[in-house]
Image (cartoon, rainbow, N blue to C red; front, top):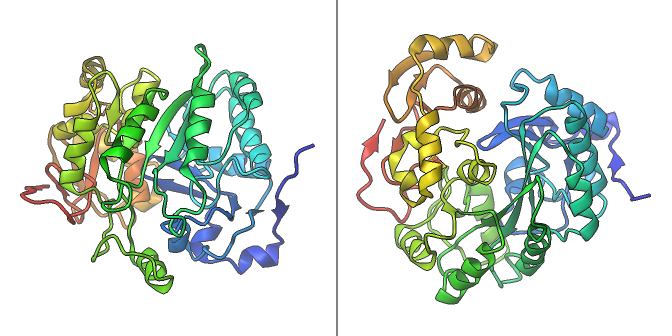
Length: 385
Ligand code: SF4
Protein backbone atom coordinates (compact mmCIF):
# COMPACT_ATOMS: atom_id res chain seq x y z
CA UNK A 1 0.00 0.00 0.00
CA UNK A 2 1.25 3.48 -0.87
CA UNK A 3 2.54 5.61 2.02
CA UNK A 4 0.29 8.48 2.93
CA UNK A 5 1.14 11.73 4.63
CA UNK A 6 0.84 12.23 8.40
CA UNK A 7 -2.28 13.85 9.82
CA UNK A 8 -1.60 16.95 11.93
CA UNK A 9 -3.06 17.14 15.43
CA UNK A 10 -5.61 19.81 16.37
CA UNK A 11 -2.85 21.67 18.27
CA UNK A 12 -0.52 21.64 15.30
CA UNK A 13 -3.28 22.89 13.02
CA UNK A 14 -4.08 25.73 15.42
CA UNK A 15 -0.47 26.88 15.23
CA UNK A 16 -0.52 27.20 11.42
CA UNK A 17 -0.79 30.65 9.84
CA UNK A 18 -4.44 31.63 9.39
CA UNK A 19 -4.53 31.40 5.60
CA UNK A 20 -2.87 28.00 5.68
CA UNK A 21 -5.78 26.74 7.78
CA UNK A 22 -8.20 27.64 5.03
CA UNK A 23 -8.52 24.30 3.28
CA UNK A 24 -11.01 25.46 0.64
CA UNK A 25 -10.21 28.76 -1.04
CA UNK A 26 -11.38 30.38 -4.25
CA UNK A 27 -8.52 31.20 -6.56
CA UNK A 28 -8.70 32.58 -10.04
CA UNK A 29 -8.91 29.32 -11.94
CA UNK A 30 -11.21 27.59 -9.49
CA UNK A 31 -12.15 26.54 -5.99
CA UNK A 32 -8.99 25.14 -4.54
CA UNK A 33 -8.72 22.22 -2.13
CA UNK A 34 -5.56 22.19 -0.02
CA UNK A 35 -5.84 19.87 2.94
CA UNK A 36 -2.30 18.67 2.31
CA UNK A 37 0.44 21.24 2.65
CA UNK A 38 4.20 21.02 2.41
CA UNK A 39 6.56 20.43 -0.47
CA UNK A 40 10.24 19.53 -0.76
CA UNK A 41 10.71 20.76 -4.35
CA UNK A 42 11.85 24.25 -3.23
CA UNK A 43 11.06 26.43 -6.26
CA UNK A 44 12.28 29.88 -5.20
CA UNK A 45 9.17 31.61 -6.55
CA UNK A 46 6.72 29.24 -4.78
CA UNK A 47 3.39 30.72 -3.72
CA UNK A 48 3.94 29.04 -0.31
CA UNK A 49 6.07 32.08 0.58
CA UNK A 50 2.93 34.17 0.65
CA UNK A 51 1.14 31.85 3.09
CA UNK A 52 3.81 31.67 5.79
CA UNK A 53 4.36 28.05 4.79
CA UNK A 54 7.73 28.12 3.09
CA UNK A 55 9.48 26.11 5.82
CA UNK A 56 6.93 23.31 5.60
CA UNK A 57 8.90 20.94 3.36
CA UNK A 58 7.24 17.70 4.47
CA UNK A 59 3.66 17.27 3.26
CA UNK A 60 1.15 16.98 6.14
CA UNK A 61 -2.61 16.59 6.11
CA UNK A 62 -4.99 18.89 7.96
CA UNK A 63 -7.84 16.37 7.69
CA UNK A 64 -8.72 13.14 5.92
CA UNK A 65 -9.49 13.11 2.20
CA UNK A 66 -13.14 12.23 2.85
CA UNK A 67 -13.52 15.16 5.27
CA UNK A 68 -11.83 17.48 2.80
CA UNK A 69 -14.06 16.49 -0.13
CA UNK A 70 -17.10 16.92 2.11
CA UNK A 71 -15.94 20.39 3.05
CA UNK A 72 -15.40 21.22 -0.62
CA UNK A 73 -18.72 20.03 -1.99
CA UNK A 74 -20.65 21.58 0.91
CA UNK A 75 -18.84 24.90 0.65
CA UNK A 76 -21.06 27.87 -0.15
CA UNK A 77 -18.92 28.58 -3.22
CA UNK A 78 -19.27 25.09 -4.66
CA UNK A 79 -21.82 24.61 -7.43
CA UNK A 80 -22.22 21.03 -8.72
CA UNK A 81 -21.14 20.63 -12.35
CA UNK A 82 -20.19 24.33 -12.60
CA UNK A 83 -17.46 25.38 -10.19
CA UNK A 84 -14.01 24.53 -11.51
CA UNK A 85 -11.99 22.76 -8.82
CA UNK A 86 -8.26 22.61 -8.28
CA UNK A 87 -6.63 19.95 -6.14
CA UNK A 88 -3.45 20.67 -4.14
CA UNK A 89 -2.34 23.63 -6.22
CA UNK A 90 -1.32 25.90 -3.38
CA UNK A 91 1.02 24.16 -1.03
CA UNK A 92 2.20 20.81 -2.34
CA UNK A 93 2.60 18.80 -5.53
CA UNK A 94 -0.25 16.33 -6.14
CA UNK A 95 2.08 13.66 -7.49
CA UNK A 96 4.74 13.62 -4.80
CA UNK A 97 5.04 9.91 -3.88
CA UNK A 98 3.15 10.21 -0.60
CA UNK A 99 0.64 12.79 -1.84
CA UNK A 100 -0.51 10.87 -4.93
CA UNK A 101 -2.77 8.39 -3.06
CA UNK A 102 -4.60 11.41 -1.64
CA UNK A 103 -4.91 12.99 -5.07
CA UNK A 104 -6.50 9.85 -6.47
CA UNK A 105 -8.74 9.50 -3.40
CA UNK A 106 -10.09 13.03 -3.94
CA UNK A 107 -10.61 12.55 -7.69
CA UNK A 108 -12.35 9.21 -7.16
CA UNK A 109 -14.56 10.59 -4.40
CA UNK A 110 -15.66 13.52 -6.60
CA UNK A 111 -16.23 11.18 -9.52
CA UNK A 112 -18.20 8.77 -7.31
CA UNK A 113 -20.64 11.63 -6.68
CA UNK A 114 -21.22 11.86 -10.46
CA UNK A 115 -19.97 15.47 -10.48
CA UNK A 116 -19.06 16.85 -13.90
CA UNK A 117 -17.01 19.82 -12.67
CA UNK A 118 -13.67 20.67 -14.18
CA UNK A 119 -10.88 19.43 -11.90
CA UNK A 120 -7.44 20.92 -12.50
CA UNK A 121 -4.38 19.06 -11.26
CA UNK A 122 -1.10 20.96 -11.59
CA UNK A 123 2.14 19.03 -11.25
CA UNK A 124 5.83 19.12 -12.04
CA UNK A 125 6.45 15.64 -10.65
CA UNK A 126 6.88 12.31 -12.41
CA UNK A 127 3.79 10.37 -13.40
CA UNK A 128 3.64 6.64 -14.06
CA UNK A 129 2.12 4.43 -16.75
CA UNK A 130 -0.43 3.06 -14.25
CA UNK A 131 -1.71 6.62 -13.71
CA UNK A 132 -3.12 6.51 -17.25
CA UNK A 133 -5.39 3.57 -16.35
CA UNK A 134 -6.40 4.95 -13.00
CA UNK A 135 -7.36 8.34 -14.41
CA UNK A 136 -9.03 6.53 -17.30
CA UNK A 137 -11.52 5.03 -14.85
CA UNK A 138 -12.98 8.40 -13.91
CA UNK A 139 -16.32 8.77 -15.65
CA UNK A 140 -17.74 12.16 -14.70
CA UNK A 141 -15.25 14.77 -13.55
CA UNK A 142 -13.44 16.63 -16.31
CA UNK A 143 -9.83 16.16 -15.29
CA UNK A 144 -7.08 18.35 -16.73
CA UNK A 145 -3.44 17.65 -15.91
CA UNK A 146 -1.31 20.78 -16.16
CA UNK A 147 2.41 20.12 -16.34
CA UNK A 148 4.43 23.02 -14.96
CA UNK A 149 7.44 23.47 -17.17
CA UNK A 150 9.77 26.45 -17.23
CA UNK A 151 13.00 25.24 -18.81
CA UNK A 152 14.85 27.21 -16.09
CA UNK A 153 18.23 25.58 -15.56
CA UNK A 154 19.37 27.75 -12.66
CA UNK A 155 19.19 25.16 -9.86
CA UNK A 156 19.13 27.80 -7.12
CA UNK A 157 15.79 28.99 -8.49
CA UNK A 158 14.35 25.66 -9.54
CA UNK A 159 16.18 22.76 -7.90
CA UNK A 160 13.73 20.21 -9.33
CA UNK A 161 14.37 19.96 -13.07
CA UNK A 162 11.69 20.86 -15.61
CA UNK A 163 12.66 17.83 -17.65
CA UNK A 164 10.65 15.65 -15.23
CA UNK A 165 7.43 17.51 -16.02
CA UNK A 166 8.29 17.34 -19.72
CA UNK A 167 8.54 13.53 -19.52
CA UNK A 168 5.30 13.30 -17.52
CA UNK A 169 3.52 15.40 -20.13
CA UNK A 170 4.73 13.12 -22.94
CA UNK A 171 3.77 9.97 -21.03
CA UNK A 172 0.29 11.11 -20.06
CA UNK A 173 -0.48 12.63 -23.47
CA UNK A 174 0.55 9.53 -25.42
CA UNK A 175 -2.69 7.47 -25.33
CA UNK A 176 -4.86 8.40 -28.27
CA UNK A 177 -8.13 7.77 -26.48
CA UNK A 178 -8.42 9.27 -23.01
CA UNK A 179 -10.95 11.37 -21.15
CA UNK A 180 -8.52 13.47 -19.15
CA UNK A 181 -6.73 16.31 -20.92
CA UNK A 182 -3.12 17.47 -20.78
CA UNK A 183 -1.73 20.99 -20.79
CA UNK A 184 1.79 22.31 -21.09
CA UNK A 185 1.79 24.89 -18.31
CA UNK A 186 4.71 26.95 -19.50
CA UNK A 187 5.67 29.13 -16.60
CA UNK A 188 7.12 31.13 -15.16
CA UNK A 189 8.60 32.90 -18.14
CA UNK A 190 11.26 35.23 -16.78
CA UNK A 191 13.41 37.49 -18.97
CA UNK A 192 17.05 36.55 -18.65
CA UNK A 193 16.34 33.17 -17.12
CA UNK A 194 14.45 31.06 -19.65
CA UNK A 195 13.71 33.21 -22.68
CA UNK A 196 16.46 32.43 -25.19
CA UNK A 197 15.38 31.30 -28.68
CA UNK A 198 16.43 27.80 -27.64
CA UNK A 199 14.15 27.88 -24.60
CA UNK A 200 11.22 29.02 -26.75
CA UNK A 201 11.96 26.35 -29.33
CA UNK A 202 12.09 23.62 -26.65
CA UNK A 203 8.72 24.70 -25.32
CA UNK A 204 7.26 24.71 -28.82
CA UNK A 205 8.44 21.14 -29.38
CA UNK A 206 6.97 20.04 -26.08
CA UNK A 207 3.69 21.76 -26.90
CA UNK A 208 3.24 19.29 -29.77
CA UNK A 209 2.47 16.59 -27.18
CA UNK A 210 -0.10 18.56 -25.18
CA UNK A 211 -3.79 19.18 -25.87
CA UNK A 212 -3.07 22.88 -25.29
CA UNK A 213 -0.39 25.22 -23.94
CA UNK A 214 -0.63 28.19 -21.56
CA UNK A 215 2.22 30.63 -21.03
CA UNK A 216 2.40 32.95 -18.05
CA UNK A 217 4.91 35.01 -16.14
CA UNK A 218 5.95 35.11 -12.53
CA UNK A 219 4.08 36.04 -9.41
CA UNK A 220 6.63 38.28 -7.82
CA UNK A 221 5.15 39.49 -4.61
CA UNK A 222 6.97 41.02 -1.68
CA UNK A 223 7.56 37.79 0.24
CA UNK A 224 9.07 36.11 -2.79
CA UNK A 225 11.26 39.14 -3.51
CA UNK A 226 12.53 38.97 0.08
CA UNK A 227 13.42 35.31 -0.39
CA UNK A 228 15.38 36.14 -3.56
CA UNK A 229 17.30 38.85 -1.72
CA UNK A 230 17.94 36.78 1.42
CA UNK A 231 19.37 33.94 -0.66
CA UNK A 232 21.41 36.09 -3.04
CA UNK A 233 19.39 34.98 -6.07
CA UNK A 234 19.40 37.18 -9.19
CA UNK A 235 16.27 39.31 -8.92
CA UNK A 236 14.24 39.32 -12.13
CA UNK A 237 12.40 42.60 -11.53
CA UNK A 238 12.87 45.76 -9.51
CA UNK A 239 9.28 46.03 -8.43
CA UNK A 240 6.67 43.61 -7.18
CA UNK A 241 3.16 43.39 -8.50
CA UNK A 242 -0.21 41.91 -7.72
CA UNK A 243 -0.64 40.17 -11.04
CA UNK A 244 1.70 38.00 -13.03
CA UNK A 245 4.39 39.58 -15.11
CA UNK A 246 5.00 38.90 -18.81
CA UNK A 247 6.83 41.74 -20.52
CA UNK A 248 5.43 42.67 -23.88
CA UNK A 249 8.47 41.96 -26.04
CA UNK A 250 8.75 38.47 -24.57
CA UNK A 251 5.10 37.81 -25.31
CA UNK A 252 5.64 38.84 -28.93
CA UNK A 253 8.58 36.44 -29.26
CA UNK A 254 6.52 33.60 -27.77
CA UNK A 255 3.78 34.16 -30.33
CA UNK A 256 6.32 34.15 -33.16
CA UNK A 257 7.84 30.89 -31.88
CA UNK A 258 4.46 29.12 -32.12
CA UNK A 259 2.47 28.34 -35.28
CA UNK A 260 -1.28 28.34 -35.77
CA UNK A 261 -1.49 24.53 -35.54
CA UNK A 262 -0.27 24.56 -31.92
CA UNK A 263 -3.02 25.82 -29.62
CA UNK A 264 -1.60 28.47 -27.30
CA UNK A 265 -3.43 30.49 -24.65
CA UNK A 266 -2.77 33.35 -22.30
CA UNK A 267 -5.26 32.14 -19.73
CA UNK A 268 -5.35 28.83 -17.89
CA UNK A 269 -9.14 28.55 -18.07
CA UNK A 270 -9.06 29.13 -21.85
CA UNK A 271 -6.65 26.24 -22.36
CA UNK A 272 -8.63 23.95 -20.03
CA UNK A 273 -11.92 24.79 -21.71
CA UNK A 274 -10.47 24.35 -25.19
CA UNK A 275 -8.96 20.99 -24.29
CA UNK A 276 -12.43 19.74 -23.29
CA UNK A 277 -14.20 21.32 -26.26
CA UNK A 278 -16.08 23.82 -24.06
CA UNK A 279 -16.32 27.62 -23.92
CA UNK A 280 -14.07 29.41 -21.43
CA UNK A 281 -15.67 29.24 -18.00
CA UNK A 282 -14.15 32.57 -16.99
CA UNK A 283 -15.83 34.44 -19.83
CA UNK A 284 -12.56 35.84 -21.15
CA UNK A 285 -14.19 36.16 -24.54
CA UNK A 286 -15.34 39.62 -23.43
CA UNK A 287 -11.71 40.70 -23.22
CA UNK A 288 -11.33 40.65 -26.98
CA UNK A 289 -7.58 41.18 -27.15
CA UNK A 290 -7.00 37.89 -25.29
CA UNK A 291 -8.59 35.91 -28.10
CA UNK A 292 -6.44 36.93 -31.06
CA UNK A 293 -4.34 33.77 -30.75
CA UNK A 294 -7.23 31.37 -30.19
CA UNK A 295 -8.19 28.64 -32.72
CA UNK A 296 -11.16 29.75 -34.83
CA UNK A 297 -13.45 26.87 -33.78
CA UNK A 298 -12.87 27.76 -30.12
CA UNK A 299 -13.49 31.43 -30.79
CA UNK A 300 -16.85 30.52 -32.26
CA UNK A 301 -17.69 28.30 -29.30
CA UNK A 302 -16.91 31.08 -26.83
CA UNK A 303 -18.78 33.64 -28.95
CA UNK A 304 -21.91 31.50 -28.90
CA UNK A 305 -21.77 31.17 -25.10
CA UNK A 306 -21.05 34.86 -24.45
CA UNK A 307 -24.01 36.64 -22.88
CA UNK A 308 -23.80 39.76 -20.75
CA UNK A 309 -25.91 39.28 -17.61
CA UNK A 310 -28.42 41.87 -16.45
CA UNK A 311 -27.85 43.67 -13.13
CA UNK A 312 -30.73 41.63 -11.72
CA UNK A 313 -29.14 38.36 -12.74
CA UNK A 314 -25.90 39.37 -11.03
CA UNK A 315 -27.74 40.35 -7.83
CA UNK A 316 -29.71 37.13 -7.94
CA UNK A 317 -26.54 35.02 -8.08
CA UNK A 318 -24.91 37.14 -5.37
CA UNK A 319 -27.83 36.53 -3.02
CA UNK A 320 -26.43 33.09 -2.19
CA UNK A 321 -23.44 34.74 -0.47
CA UNK A 322 -23.69 36.64 2.83
CA UNK A 323 -20.40 38.43 2.05
CA UNK A 324 -21.92 39.84 -1.15
CA UNK A 325 -24.86 41.61 0.50
CA UNK A 326 -23.27 45.04 -0.13
CA UNK A 327 -22.66 44.28 -3.79
CA UNK A 328 -23.29 47.15 -6.19
CA UNK A 329 -23.36 46.61 -9.95
CA UNK A 330 -21.43 49.65 -11.19
CA UNK A 331 -21.43 48.92 -14.92
CA UNK A 332 -21.98 46.13 -17.44
CA UNK A 333 -20.30 46.16 -20.81
CA UNK A 334 -19.63 43.49 -23.43
CA UNK A 335 -16.27 42.98 -21.73
CA UNK A 336 -17.19 42.62 -18.08
CA UNK A 337 -19.52 43.42 -15.22
CA UNK A 338 -17.92 45.92 -12.85
CA UNK A 339 -18.96 45.61 -9.23
CA UNK A 340 -18.16 47.17 -5.87
CA UNK A 341 -18.87 46.20 -2.28
CA UNK A 342 -16.94 42.90 -2.20
CA UNK A 343 -14.26 42.81 0.44
CA UNK A 344 -12.23 39.96 -1.00
CA UNK A 345 -11.70 38.42 -4.41
CA UNK A 346 -13.28 35.06 -3.61
CA UNK A 347 -16.95 36.02 -4.07
CA UNK A 348 -16.02 37.73 -7.32
CA UNK A 349 -14.70 34.43 -8.69
CA UNK A 350 -17.92 32.76 -7.56
CA UNK A 351 -19.98 35.28 -9.53
CA UNK A 352 -17.70 34.95 -12.54
CA UNK A 353 -18.03 31.19 -12.70
CA UNK A 354 -21.75 31.18 -11.98
CA UNK A 355 -22.33 33.68 -14.81
CA UNK A 356 -19.58 32.52 -17.20
CA UNK A 357 -18.84 36.22 -17.60
CA UNK A 358 -15.99 38.43 -16.43
CA UNK A 359 -16.68 40.20 -13.16
CA UNK A 360 -14.23 42.96 -12.24
CA UNK A 361 -13.84 44.85 -9.01
CA UNK A 362 -14.05 48.60 -9.43
CA UNK A 363 -10.97 48.92 -7.18
CA UNK A 364 -8.82 46.81 -9.52
CA UNK A 365 -9.53 48.07 -13.02
CA UNK A 366 -8.17 45.87 -15.77
CA UNK A 367 -6.08 47.52 -18.41
CA UNK A 368 -6.58 46.92 -22.10
CA UNK A 369 -4.02 44.67 -23.79
CA UNK A 370 -2.61 43.37 -20.55
CA UNK A 371 -5.58 41.87 -18.84
CA UNK A 372 -4.54 40.23 -15.62
CA UNK A 373 -0.91 41.06 -16.17
CA UNK A 374 1.21 43.46 -14.20
CA UNK A 375 2.32 46.92 -15.31
CA UNK A 376 6.00 46.04 -15.33
CA UNK A 377 7.39 45.75 -18.85
CA UNK A 378 4.28 47.05 -20.62
CA UNK A 379 3.68 50.35 -22.37
CA UNK A 380 0.67 52.16 -23.75
CA UNK A 381 -1.99 50.20 -21.85
CA UNK A 382 -5.30 52.00 -21.82
CA UNK A 383 -7.51 52.12 -18.77
CA UNK A 384 -10.40 49.73 -19.13
CA UNK A 385 -12.84 49.90 -16.28
S1 SF4 B 1 -12.09 32.54 -27.61
FE1 SF4 B 1 -11.08 33.88 -26.15
S2 SF4 B 1 -12.11 33.40 -24.23
FE2 SF4 B 1 -12.55 31.70 -25.60
S3 SF4 B 1 -10.94 30.19 -25.16
FE3 SF4 B 1 -10.28 31.47 -26.88
S4 SF4 B 1 -9.01 33.02 -25.92
FE4 SF4 B 1 -10.28 32.14 -24.32
